[in-house]
Image (cartoon, rainbow, N blue to C red; front, top):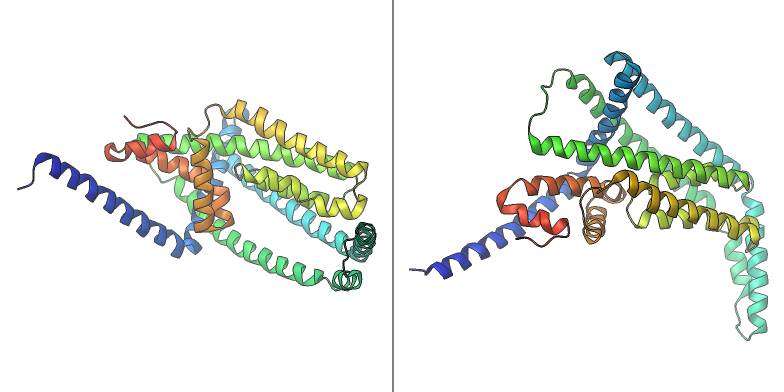
Length: 339
């Protein structure tokens, strides 16, 4: 017979082992079914944003339900079409000046190697110049086009899921489960605030880049809009993306540093001052939990996982907080020691 102390220890050990096994099984399930789950989860979040827009039009402008839904769908479709057209035009303009940028880069490398030789650092200048002349720019763009086609294929699946959600929402009874209601409310607030903050960041960045006539300005602004959804790392990557093009256009001149300074200030003001003010307490996640979730979901689902890491983790935390045995895990995610 086991004593009470031994039995309690056995129970805790069993619970920990089962939790680890369950986590492994769930992770494997997420990895092997990501081709279906990623479009499904993205469509749920898009539907959440669309539902918020529909409610706003109904309450603010007294639109009928069908009219509010139609306007929301058309607005989203118009924005997406505009983004695609601007991206294609930007890449086309960049390709037209590709040879000029290549020559500028060769001239810069030649000047750099000459300066290094004056300080006793010898580099094979001919090798570098030949390598730069043979840069597989068009192969990179071909790969980019393939990824864009894959993205469009996923968007088709997402749109199909959203159509099912839109037509099924009229027949679905109101949600009464408190956990699901809280989850949807938090995700809706997060996505709405994040969408407005990202849109503001993208528009300001577009104004700055277009004002200085930076090539691929609209494309970089689009990336700043998208990367703003990735916590912590996204804003840093967004600011660094235009560096190569800025260098090819202006070198390390005053315009280079002015544009970089303005972009950095935009990310800092919107991301660190304005966004937290409107988001309030946010998703009640500790910064360490946010970074850990970013790493985990990026490893499991790649780039889509990075974009969805915060709302997914916040939703999981809400579910864990409603179950007695998993409540300590929710407290840890929030940065609080469990009682």
